[in-house]
Length: 77
Image (cartoon, rainbow, N blue to C red; front, top):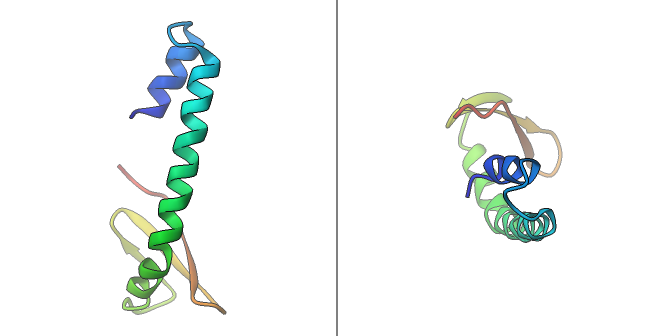
């Protein structure tokens, strides 16, 4: 689903705002749940790359000190 298109349709009065909001909140929860499932495995994969910062899959990954955490910046489509 294209969430930007959905929001534009709401602004243009083509889609009910409450309906869209509920759909977006449901998607947000599903995405958060999916991230929790994948996160530790993704961290393990990131540990295979050398250096504190590296590029992968259109994103810049920065490894953080401590509990093997990392963040990404600048996903390019």
